[in-house]
Length: 443
Image 1: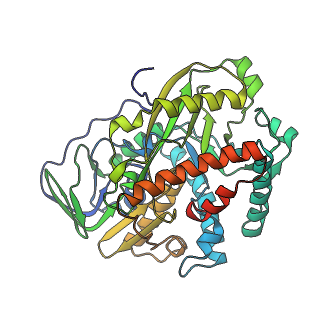
Image 2: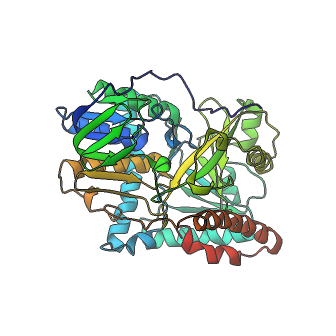
Image 3: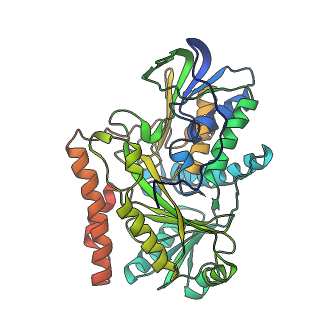
Protein backbone atom coordinates (compact mmCIF):
# COMPACT_ATOMS: atom_id res chain seq x y z
CA UNK A 1 0.00 0.00 0.00
CA UNK A 2 2.98 2.33 0.41
CA UNK A 3 3.09 5.17 2.88
CA UNK A 4 -0.06 5.94 4.95
CA UNK A 5 -2.74 7.80 2.98
CA UNK A 6 -5.42 9.71 4.89
CA UNK A 7 -8.91 9.45 3.37
CA UNK A 8 -9.86 12.79 4.95
CA UNK A 9 -6.91 14.75 3.50
CA UNK A 10 -7.63 17.48 0.99
CA UNK A 11 -6.45 20.74 -0.45
CA UNK A 12 -6.03 23.44 2.19
CA UNK A 13 -5.36 27.14 2.14
CA UNK A 14 -1.70 28.07 2.63
CA UNK A 15 -1.39 30.41 5.59
CA UNK A 16 1.65 32.47 6.63
CA UNK A 17 3.96 32.05 9.58
CA UNK A 18 3.82 34.56 12.41
CA UNK A 19 5.83 37.54 11.08
CA UNK A 20 6.97 38.82 14.49
CA UNK A 21 5.75 40.02 17.86
CA UNK A 22 2.14 41.10 18.09
CA UNK A 23 -0.66 41.74 20.55
CA UNK A 24 -4.12 40.20 20.67
CA UNK A 25 -7.05 39.86 23.03
CA UNK A 26 -7.13 36.05 22.83
CA UNK A 27 -4.27 33.80 21.68
CA UNK A 28 -5.24 30.23 20.77
CA UNK A 29 -2.52 27.58 20.47
CA UNK A 30 -3.66 24.85 18.08
CA UNK A 31 -5.80 25.02 14.93
CA UNK A 32 -7.74 21.81 15.44
CA UNK A 33 -11.39 21.52 16.42
CA UNK A 34 -10.88 22.87 19.95
CA UNK A 35 -9.01 25.98 18.86
CA UNK A 36 -11.18 26.70 15.84
CA UNK A 37 -14.52 26.21 17.63
CA UNK A 38 -13.28 28.52 20.40
CA UNK A 39 -12.24 31.13 17.83
CA UNK A 40 -15.57 30.76 16.03
CA UNK A 41 -17.78 31.29 19.05
CA UNK A 42 -15.67 34.16 20.40
CA UNK A 43 -15.72 35.93 17.04
CA UNK A 44 -19.47 35.46 16.75
CA UNK A 45 -20.04 36.71 20.31
CA UNK A 46 -17.72 39.76 20.03
CA UNK A 47 -16.63 40.67 16.48
CA UNK A 48 -14.28 43.32 17.90
CA UNK A 49 -12.02 40.80 19.65
CA UNK A 50 -8.51 40.42 18.25
CA UNK A 51 -8.11 36.64 18.04
CA UNK A 52 -4.89 34.97 16.88
CA UNK A 53 -4.56 31.20 16.30
CA UNK A 54 -1.06 29.70 16.24
CA UNK A 55 -0.59 26.29 14.58
CA UNK A 56 2.67 24.32 14.44
CA UNK A 57 1.69 22.54 11.21
CA UNK A 58 -1.49 23.23 9.24
CA UNK A 59 -5.10 23.61 10.34
CA UNK A 60 -6.50 20.17 11.20
CA UNK A 61 -3.08 18.47 11.12
CA UNK A 62 -3.71 16.49 14.33
CA UNK A 63 -6.59 14.30 15.46
CA UNK A 64 -9.17 16.74 14.07
CA UNK A 65 -8.19 15.76 10.53
CA UNK A 66 -7.55 12.07 11.14
CA UNK A 67 -10.38 10.70 13.31
CA UNK A 68 -13.22 8.30 12.60
CA UNK A 69 -15.79 10.98 11.83
CA UNK A 70 -18.09 10.19 14.75
CA UNK A 71 -19.83 13.36 15.91
CA UNK A 72 -21.28 11.64 18.97
CA UNK A 73 -22.61 12.34 22.44
CA UNK A 74 -20.00 10.02 23.96
CA UNK A 75 -17.99 11.35 26.91
CA UNK A 76 -14.88 9.38 27.88
CA UNK A 77 -15.99 8.58 31.44
CA UNK A 78 -19.26 7.30 32.79
CA UNK A 79 -21.97 9.46 34.35
CA UNK A 80 -21.20 7.81 37.68
CA UNK A 81 -17.58 8.98 37.45
CA UNK A 82 -18.71 12.48 36.44
CA UNK A 83 -21.09 12.68 39.39
CA UNK A 84 -18.24 11.74 41.73
CA UNK A 85 -16.01 14.66 40.68
CA UNK A 86 -15.46 17.35 43.36
CA UNK A 87 -18.40 19.74 43.38
CA UNK A 88 -20.41 17.57 41.00
CA UNK A 89 -23.65 15.66 41.52
CA UNK A 90 -26.02 13.28 39.82
CA UNK A 91 -27.93 16.23 38.35
CA UNK A 92 -24.72 17.80 37.04
CA UNK A 93 -23.65 14.56 35.37
CA UNK A 94 -27.03 14.31 33.66
CA UNK A 95 -26.69 17.92 32.45
CA UNK A 96 -23.28 17.08 30.99
CA UNK A 97 -24.87 14.18 29.11
CA UNK A 98 -27.60 16.47 27.74
CA UNK A 99 -25.03 19.10 26.74
CA UNK A 100 -23.16 16.44 24.78
CA UNK A 101 -26.34 15.47 22.94
CA UNK A 102 -27.02 19.11 22.11
CA UNK A 103 -23.47 19.46 20.77
CA UNK A 104 -24.12 16.79 18.14
CA UNK A 105 -26.96 18.91 16.78
CA UNK A 106 -24.99 22.15 17.14
CA UNK A 107 -22.23 20.89 14.85
CA UNK A 108 -24.81 20.16 12.17
CA UNK A 109 -26.56 23.50 12.60
CA UNK A 110 -23.36 25.55 12.39
CA UNK A 111 -22.09 23.55 9.42
CA UNK A 112 -25.30 24.25 7.54
CA UNK A 113 -25.44 27.92 8.57
CA UNK A 114 -21.83 28.55 7.52
CA UNK A 115 -22.00 26.56 4.31
CA UNK A 116 -19.51 23.89 5.44
CA UNK A 117 -20.27 20.71 3.49
CA UNK A 118 -18.84 18.06 5.81
CA UNK A 119 -21.15 15.15 4.82
CA UNK A 120 -23.03 15.52 8.13
CA UNK A 121 -25.70 12.85 8.53
CA UNK A 122 -27.28 11.99 11.86
CA UNK A 123 -27.94 8.26 11.65
CA UNK A 124 -27.07 7.33 15.26
CA UNK A 125 -24.69 4.62 16.46
CA UNK A 126 -25.11 0.85 16.51
CA UNK A 127 -22.81 -1.06 18.87
CA UNK A 128 -23.05 -4.77 18.17
CA UNK A 129 -22.99 -7.62 20.69
CA UNK A 130 -21.39 -10.65 19.03
CA UNK A 131 -20.58 -12.87 22.04
CA UNK A 132 -22.53 -13.71 25.18
CA UNK A 133 -20.18 -11.55 27.26
CA UNK A 134 -20.72 -8.63 24.91
CA UNK A 135 -24.47 -9.21 25.07
CA UNK A 136 -24.42 -8.99 28.86
CA UNK A 137 -22.45 -5.71 28.65
CA UNK A 138 -24.92 -4.30 26.13
CA UNK A 139 -27.89 -5.02 28.39
CA UNK A 140 -26.07 -3.59 31.42
CA UNK A 141 -25.17 -0.44 29.49
CA UNK A 142 -28.80 0.14 28.54
CA UNK A 143 -29.91 -0.36 32.15
CA UNK A 144 -27.29 2.13 33.36
CA UNK A 145 -28.27 4.66 30.70
CA UNK A 146 -31.91 4.50 31.81
CA UNK A 147 -30.81 5.04 35.40
CA UNK A 148 -28.66 8.08 34.59
CA UNK A 149 -30.34 9.75 31.65
CA UNK A 150 -33.48 10.20 29.61
CA UNK A 151 -33.42 6.56 28.52
CA UNK A 152 -32.55 7.14 24.86
CA UNK A 153 -30.13 4.20 24.59
CA UNK A 154 -32.05 1.23 23.21
CA UNK A 155 -31.38 -2.49 23.20
CA UNK A 156 -31.99 -4.12 19.83
CA UNK A 157 -32.63 -7.78 19.13
CA UNK A 158 -31.02 -9.50 16.13
CA UNK A 159 -33.89 -8.71 13.74
CA UNK A 160 -33.91 -5.05 14.79
CA UNK A 161 -30.16 -4.87 14.29
CA UNK A 162 -30.50 -6.34 10.79
CA UNK A 163 -32.79 -3.45 9.84
CA UNK A 164 -29.83 -1.10 10.43
CA UNK A 165 -26.75 -3.20 9.70
CA UNK A 166 -26.15 -6.81 8.75
CA UNK A 167 -23.01 -8.17 10.36
CA UNK A 168 -21.86 -11.65 11.36
CA UNK A 169 -22.54 -13.41 14.68
CA UNK A 170 -24.94 -10.71 15.91
CA UNK A 171 -26.79 -11.51 19.15
CA UNK A 172 -28.06 -7.98 19.76
CA UNK A 173 -26.89 -4.39 19.91
CA UNK A 174 -27.30 -1.03 21.56
CA UNK A 175 -28.48 1.96 19.55
CA UNK A 176 -28.44 5.68 20.26
CA UNK A 177 -29.73 8.35 17.86
CA UNK A 178 -27.20 10.88 19.17
CA UNK A 179 -24.42 10.57 16.61
CA UNK A 180 -23.75 11.92 13.14
CA UNK A 181 -21.26 10.62 10.60
CA UNK A 182 -19.11 13.41 9.17
CA UNK A 183 -16.05 13.99 6.99
CA UNK A 184 -13.77 15.50 9.65
CA UNK A 185 -11.27 16.91 7.16
CA UNK A 186 -13.96 18.91 5.39
CA UNK A 187 -15.26 20.18 8.74
CA UNK A 188 -11.91 21.32 10.15
CA UNK A 189 -10.83 22.98 6.90
CA UNK A 190 -14.22 24.64 6.57
CA UNK A 191 -14.01 25.93 10.14
CA UNK A 192 -10.57 27.41 9.52
CA UNK A 193 -11.83 29.33 6.49
CA UNK A 194 -14.95 30.42 8.38
CA UNK A 195 -13.07 31.91 11.33
CA UNK A 196 -10.79 33.81 8.97
CA UNK A 197 -13.84 35.24 7.26
CA UNK A 198 -14.99 36.39 10.70
CA UNK A 199 -11.74 38.28 11.27
CA UNK A 200 -9.64 35.70 13.13
CA UNK A 201 -5.96 35.52 12.14
CA UNK A 202 -4.54 32.01 11.70
CA UNK A 203 -0.76 31.51 11.48
CA UNK A 204 0.50 28.11 10.35
CA UNK A 205 3.97 26.53 10.60
CA UNK A 206 4.38 28.48 13.83
CA UNK A 207 5.22 26.13 16.72
CA UNK A 208 4.72 27.50 20.20
CA UNK A 209 7.82 26.78 22.28
CA UNK A 210 6.32 27.92 25.59
CA UNK A 211 3.09 29.38 26.82
CA UNK A 212 2.02 31.09 30.02
CA UNK A 213 -0.83 33.28 31.18
CA UNK A 214 -0.84 36.23 28.81
CA UNK A 215 1.76 35.11 26.25
CA UNK A 216 2.80 32.46 23.73
CA UNK A 217 6.40 32.30 22.52
CA UNK A 218 7.39 31.01 19.08
CA UNK A 219 10.66 31.01 17.10
CA UNK A 220 9.26 33.90 15.07
CA UNK A 221 7.97 36.16 17.82
CA UNK A 222 5.85 36.40 20.94
CA UNK A 223 2.10 36.92 20.90
CA UNK A 224 0.63 38.56 23.98
CA UNK A 225 -3.00 38.55 24.94
CA UNK A 226 -5.30 38.81 27.91
CA UNK A 227 -6.04 35.08 27.58
CA UNK A 228 -3.99 32.25 26.07
CA UNK A 229 -5.87 29.04 25.20
CA UNK A 230 -4.05 25.71 25.15
CA UNK A 231 -5.80 23.62 22.49
CA UNK A 232 -3.06 21.13 21.64
CA UNK A 233 -4.69 17.80 22.69
CA UNK A 234 -2.34 14.85 21.92
CA UNK A 235 0.52 17.26 21.15
CA UNK A 236 0.44 18.80 24.64
CA UNK A 237 3.92 18.79 26.17
CA UNK A 238 4.72 17.20 29.52
CA UNK A 239 2.72 14.69 31.53
CA UNK A 240 -0.73 16.29 31.31
CA UNK A 241 -1.91 14.11 28.41
CA UNK A 242 -0.48 10.89 27.00
CA UNK A 243 -0.44 10.70 23.18
CA UNK A 244 -1.97 7.31 22.34
CA UNK A 245 -2.22 6.32 18.69
CA UNK A 246 -5.38 5.24 16.91
CA UNK A 247 -5.20 3.94 13.33
CA UNK A 248 -7.66 3.69 10.45
CA UNK A 249 -8.19 2.00 7.09
CA UNK A 250 -10.69 2.69 4.32
CA UNK A 251 -12.00 0.71 1.37
CA UNK A 252 -12.63 1.72 -2.18
CA UNK A 253 -16.29 2.71 -2.88
CA UNK A 254 -18.34 -0.47 -2.55
CA UNK A 255 -20.89 -1.71 -5.06
CA UNK A 256 -24.63 -1.42 -4.57
CA UNK A 257 -24.79 -5.21 -4.23
CA UNK A 258 -22.32 -5.16 -1.32
CA UNK A 259 -24.22 -2.36 0.38
CA UNK A 260 -27.45 -4.34 -0.01
CA UNK A 261 -25.75 -7.11 1.99
CA UNK A 262 -24.27 -4.83 4.66
CA UNK A 263 -27.06 -2.30 5.12
CA UNK A 264 -26.02 0.92 6.88
CA UNK A 265 -28.47 2.71 4.57
CA UNK A 266 -29.01 5.51 7.10
CA UNK A 267 -25.25 5.79 7.70
CA UNK A 268 -25.23 4.92 11.42
CA UNK A 269 -21.73 4.74 12.83
CA UNK A 270 -20.91 1.28 14.12
CA UNK A 271 -18.78 -0.63 16.60
CA UNK A 272 -19.10 -3.65 18.85
CA UNK A 273 -18.81 -4.30 22.58
CA UNK A 274 -15.28 -5.72 22.56
CA UNK A 275 -12.74 -4.17 24.93
CA UNK A 276 -10.17 -2.99 22.37
CA UNK A 277 -12.08 -0.17 20.71
CA UNK A 278 -13.12 -0.33 17.06
CA UNK A 279 -15.19 2.25 15.16
CA UNK A 280 -16.51 2.65 11.63
CA UNK A 281 -18.81 4.51 9.29
CA UNK A 282 -20.26 4.36 5.80
CA UNK A 283 -18.89 7.45 4.10
CA UNK A 284 -20.93 9.74 1.88
CA UNK A 285 -19.06 8.42 -1.17
CA UNK A 286 -19.84 4.79 -0.35
CA UNK A 287 -16.71 3.53 1.41
CA UNK A 288 -16.20 1.84 4.74
CA UNK A 289 -13.87 3.87 6.96
CA UNK A 290 -12.80 1.77 9.94
CA UNK A 291 -10.42 2.27 12.84
CA UNK A 292 -9.33 1.03 16.21
CA UNK A 293 -6.75 1.00 18.95
CA UNK A 294 -3.85 -1.42 19.17
CA UNK A 295 -0.85 0.70 18.24
CA UNK A 296 1.66 1.06 21.08
CA UNK A 297 2.29 4.09 23.25
CA UNK A 298 5.80 5.38 22.60
CA UNK A 299 8.37 6.00 25.31
CA UNK A 300 8.46 9.56 26.71
CA UNK A 301 5.30 10.45 24.78
CA UNK A 302 7.19 10.65 21.52
CA UNK A 303 5.25 11.61 18.40
CA UNK A 304 6.69 10.90 14.95
CA UNK A 305 5.20 10.57 11.46
CA UNK A 306 6.59 7.02 11.34
CA UNK A 307 4.27 6.05 14.23
CA UNK A 308 1.25 6.68 11.96
CA UNK A 309 2.27 3.61 9.96
CA UNK A 310 1.92 0.27 11.81
CA UNK A 311 1.35 -2.46 9.18
CA UNK A 312 0.55 -5.05 11.86
CA UNK A 313 -2.35 -2.95 13.17
CA UNK A 314 -3.54 -2.00 9.69
CA UNK A 315 -3.64 -5.71 8.87
CA UNK A 316 -5.68 -6.48 11.99
CA UNK A 317 -8.17 -3.71 11.17
CA UNK A 318 -8.60 -5.02 7.65
CA UNK A 319 -9.09 -8.57 8.92
CA UNK A 320 -11.60 -7.41 11.54
CA UNK A 321 -13.67 -5.54 8.96
CA UNK A 322 -13.65 -8.53 6.60
CA UNK A 323 -14.82 -10.84 9.40
CA UNK A 324 -17.39 -8.35 10.69
CA UNK A 325 -19.27 -8.17 7.39
CA UNK A 326 -18.00 -11.30 5.58
CA UNK A 327 -16.68 -9.23 2.69
CA UNK A 328 -13.37 -8.96 0.83
CA UNK A 329 -13.06 -5.30 -0.15
CA UNK A 330 -10.08 -3.54 -1.69
CA UNK A 331 -8.43 -1.22 0.84
CA UNK A 332 -7.17 2.06 -0.57
CA UNK A 333 -6.24 4.13 2.50
CA UNK A 334 -4.49 3.66 5.84
CA UNK A 335 -3.49 6.35 8.33
CA UNK A 336 -3.32 7.24 11.99
CA UNK A 337 -2.29 9.71 14.63
CA UNK A 338 -2.19 10.47 18.35
CA UNK A 339 -5.08 11.43 20.59
CA UNK A 340 -4.84 12.85 24.11
CA UNK A 341 -5.52 10.68 27.16
CA UNK A 342 -5.54 12.19 30.68
CA UNK A 343 -4.55 10.03 33.64
CA UNK A 344 -8.17 9.67 34.83
CA UNK A 345 -9.68 9.60 31.30
CA UNK A 346 -11.74 12.71 32.16
CA UNK A 347 -11.84 15.45 29.53
CA UNK A 348 -11.76 18.96 30.94
CA UNK A 349 -12.06 22.63 30.09
CA UNK A 350 -11.17 25.64 32.20
CA UNK A 351 -9.73 29.11 32.68
CA UNK A 352 -7.25 29.97 35.40
CA UNK A 353 -6.05 33.55 35.34
CA UNK A 354 -4.84 34.24 31.82
CA UNK A 355 -4.48 30.60 30.76
CA UNK A 356 -7.39 28.54 29.41
CA UNK A 357 -7.39 24.91 28.29
CA UNK A 358 -9.54 22.14 26.89
CA UNK A 359 -8.75 18.58 25.93
CA UNK A 360 -8.26 15.01 27.04
CA UNK A 361 -11.10 13.72 24.87
CA UNK A 362 -9.75 10.13 24.60
CA UNK A 363 -10.95 9.94 21.01
CA UNK A 364 -14.44 11.35 21.66
CA UNK A 365 -13.56 14.87 20.57
CA UNK A 366 -15.52 15.73 17.42
CA UNK A 367 -18.55 17.03 19.30
CA UNK A 368 -16.87 17.51 22.70
CA UNK A 369 -14.61 20.14 21.13
CA UNK A 370 -17.70 22.06 20.08
CA UNK A 371 -18.95 22.03 23.67
CA UNK A 372 -15.45 23.09 24.77
CA UNK A 373 -15.43 26.00 22.33
CA UNK A 374 -18.78 27.33 23.57
CA UNK A 375 -17.72 26.83 27.18
CA UNK A 376 -14.40 28.63 26.67
CA UNK A 377 -16.29 31.49 25.02
CA UNK A 378 -18.41 31.91 28.14
CA UNK A 379 -15.45 31.58 30.51
CA UNK A 380 -13.31 34.08 28.57
CA UNK A 381 -16.17 36.57 28.29
CA UNK A 382 -16.88 36.06 32.01
CA UNK A 383 -20.39 34.78 31.49
CA UNK A 384 -22.01 32.64 34.17
CA UNK A 385 -24.00 30.12 32.13
CA UNK A 386 -25.25 26.56 32.32
CA UNK A 387 -22.19 25.54 30.30
CA UNK A 388 -19.70 27.03 32.76
CA UNK A 389 -21.35 25.08 35.59
CA UNK A 390 -20.96 21.63 33.99
CA UNK A 391 -18.87 19.18 36.06
CA UNK A 392 -15.93 18.98 33.63
CA UNK A 393 -15.28 22.73 33.94
CA UNK A 394 -12.18 23.39 36.00
CA UNK A 395 -11.36 19.72 36.47
CA UNK A 396 -7.66 18.92 36.61
CA UNK A 397 -6.51 15.36 36.07
CA UNK A 398 -3.42 14.33 37.98
CA UNK A 399 -0.30 13.98 35.87
CA UNK A 400 0.83 10.74 34.32
CA UNK A 401 3.60 8.85 36.07
CA UNK A 402 7.20 9.54 34.98
CA UNK A 403 8.90 7.15 32.59
CA UNK A 404 9.36 4.23 32.43
CA UNK A 405 6.24 3.71 34.57
CA UNK A 406 4.07 5.54 32.03
CA UNK A 407 5.30 3.40 29.13
CA UNK A 408 4.91 0.19 31.12
CA UNK A 409 1.46 1.07 32.43
CA UNK A 410 -0.17 2.23 29.20
CA UNK A 411 1.16 -0.62 27.07
CA UNK A 412 0.34 -3.17 29.78
CA UNK A 413 -3.21 -1.82 29.80
CA UNK A 414 -3.47 -2.23 26.03
CA UNK A 415 -2.22 -5.82 26.25
CA UNK A 416 -4.63 -6.52 29.11
CA UNK A 417 -7.66 -5.44 27.11
CA UNK A 418 -6.49 -7.49 24.12
CA UNK A 419 -6.16 -10.47 26.46
CA UNK A 420 -9.64 -9.75 27.86
CA UNK A 421 -11.19 -10.06 24.40
CA UNK A 422 -9.35 -13.34 23.84
CA UNK A 423 -10.44 -14.62 27.27
CA UNK A 424 -14.08 -13.91 26.43
CA UNK A 425 -13.87 -15.71 23.10
CA UNK A 426 -12.48 -18.79 24.86
CA UNK A 427 -14.56 -18.83 28.07
CA UNK A 428 -17.73 -17.21 26.68
CA UNK A 429 -17.95 -15.30 29.98
CA UNK A 430 -17.19 -11.72 30.93
CA UNK A 431 -13.48 -11.24 31.38
CA UNK A 432 -12.03 -11.01 34.89
CA UNK A 433 -9.16 -9.00 33.44
CA UNK A 434 -11.58 -6.41 32.07
CA UNK A 435 -13.34 -6.06 35.43
CA UNK A 436 -10.01 -5.30 37.08
CA UNK A 437 -9.09 -2.75 34.38
CA UNK A 438 -12.46 -0.93 34.27
CA UNK A 439 -11.65 1.68 36.95
CA UNK A 440 -8.52 2.68 34.99
CA UNK A 441 -10.20 3.23 31.61
CA UNK A 442 -13.20 5.43 32.36
CA UNK A 443 -15.58 2.80 33.66
